[in-house]
Amino acid sequence: MTRTLAIALAAIVILASCAGTEAPSSTTHVLISGSATPQPSRAKIVVSYSNVLADFFPAYVAKESGIFDQNFLDVDLQLIASTTGLPALLAGQTQIAHIGGSEALTTTAGGGDVVVVANTGPVWPYQLYVAADIKTPADLKGKKVAIAGVGGTFDIGIRTMLPKLGLVPDTDVTVFSTGSTANATAALLSGAVSGTLSSPPDTLKLDAAGYHSLAKMADLNLPTAATTIVVTRAYVTANKAVVQRYVDSIVQAIAKARADKAATIAALKKYLKSDDDKGMQAAYDWYVGTVLKDPPTPTAAQLAGIQEVVAKFNDKVRTVDPAKIVDDSFVKSALDRGLLK
Image 1: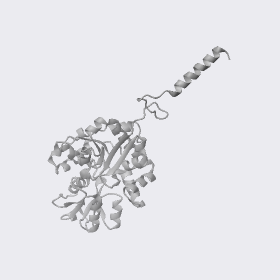
Image 2: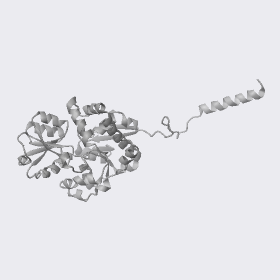
Image 3: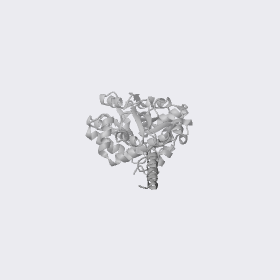
Image 4: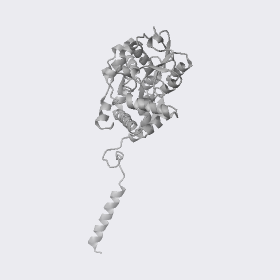
């Protein structure tokens, strides 16, 4: 071997050694495979949902199918009653709440600075179920109807529906709070009340027990915000990318639910704690096929559609401008990137 060749080989060995042992700097990002995009840090967030209902299927599906994980979100999904859902959000105990638009309006009227970033309940999902002896709306006069909680979605729903049937809430019909949707159904089954709002799968249980649907709220074609996704404005400002990834996950979960019926029914069974195949099938068909047939884009009109009824509990709600608490940019971004396809 010549001296020149030996020197050249030594130089190559030294260069290769340096290249292979260089330590990454503290600012080096791990790259997603096949992409030059830095992988985002995983965000740990606590998310609430307000009732054991199929209304919240996008969150159930996103959790169970791994969509949250794929979007670098570590989501602790917790059941927190609607009466405490937004206080928990304002206190920082949760970062995102799946809750009725009525609570968002009331919280804003009370000085809370919250933002509605999606609406997964743009259609009233409820039917008014009544006892067998109630044949017409007039038969409900002097009777009781059960709701979950005062000021919650069931309460706003019944107070929206009864006037359409020619009945005055609290005058013609007593609105009776039971504390939960399960308790409201139980109150009707026990005969303690003559009616309640219901949706699949509970409607099947009521049908089997001899109760019947007197009216469907979906037939009223009223804009509403029955189930919204709410965050504080401060959290949105400080964590816009996290909120976007969360809304992305919800939109992707809706697409997943439409494409994978079996997986969605499995998620419903888990969160509704039911092995009733027929009931879960009915819940799937109703919520996936009817309630969320459109993208979950929030609008001011949806909140305005319930504002007057909510204001009957709190006059300050009339001063709230729904347009100022709606931010549709997150859903629009997800749709623009084709996440619902």
